[in-house]
Each structure stands twice: as C-alpha cells, then as structure tokens.
Image (tube, rainbow, N blue to C red; front, side, top):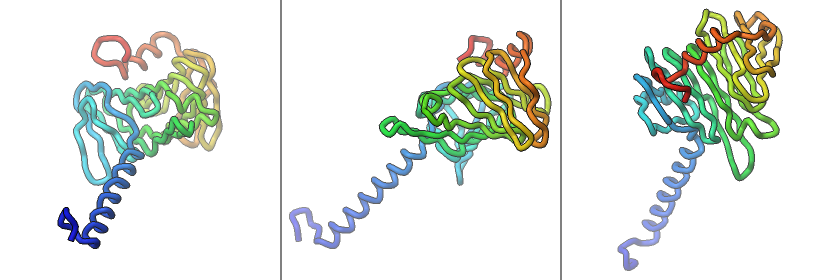
Length: 221
C-alpha cells in the first residue's frame, strides 16, 4: 500500500481515468466553433441531444443548429475571428468549423436553411485555400476574404450581395457567377436555375439587406 492509500491497480485505473477526461476535454475544444458575442431577442442552439438558450458568452460548437426568433439578432465571433450576424427567423447550421493558428489551416462548412445572415471572414478567408463556404438549398456561397450578405429575405429566392472585400462566388448544378464589385448582387431562384448575372443592387435594396441583420436601431455590429 502506498502513502496515498492506493495500490498499483488503483493508481493505474486513476491514471487511465484522468487521461480519458483530458482527451474528452481536448475533443470538446476541437469542436468549439465560436462564441455568442452579442444577442437581441430570443435564440437557441440545437446540439445533438439538447437545446440551449443563447446568451452573450455562450459557446457554439461544430454541429450546432442555431435558430433565432422574431426580431432577434445574434452575432457570432468565430474561432478564427470571423463575424457572422444572423437575422430574425433564421436557421443556420455550423456543420464544421476548424482553425489552427499554429498549422495555418482551417475550413468552415456552414448552412443557411432559412432567414438571412451577414459574414465578415476572419483568418480562414486569408488562407491560400480559403475554404469558407455557406450552403443553401439554392446554391453554395464561397469567399475570397470578404464581407457579404445572403438570405431568403426579399422572396423565396436566395439573394447574395458583396458588401466589402475581394469577392465571392455563388454556384449550383446549373451554373456559377463571381461578384467582385462591392454593392453588386445576384439572385438564385432554386437549385436547378443558374445564379443571375451580378447587377448593382442600389441603395434601397442594400439598406434593406443590411437592416435585416442590424441590432436595434443602431449601427451595424
């Protein structure tokens, strides 16, 4: 018997138990995608087996489905510094979000089911591969380090606009368009219809898009 009162088998079990806890913690850290930086109104995250009301500081994980209520807004600060703002009545899925500053690697696989969002990309948008994509039923949006808006806000069709940065592309099985001029946008009717050629949206439509993800009556987050 040792001074601590453990025999060898007990000590071995304790070490294995502590190792298992450490590995579980590391696995959880790896799944962390970001944190709720600001919230207005009611919103919650569906984890695999549970649902959690969101408040400022809530950690969001890869695999989470975030749902916002009427007049709600949620600003997520992702692990690479990206900012994602969700508008009201929005359903948004973080399928996967990985980033390693040490290895300079990362990828983001996101999905907009309904509603509207605005994204300002972080470190992933500056990587060589720039693997940051938002999937929707109508098309997939990819980036080149940018600030953009997307949503089913004006109609049942998907609208996407470039608000800043280098550019975005929108593609589905029917075609692909690239937007590199700030203020231009495209509309995608459905997954079988090619995205429309980019056009200047104009101040009224751009303002309406931005307003859909603006907190209260103040400035953009």
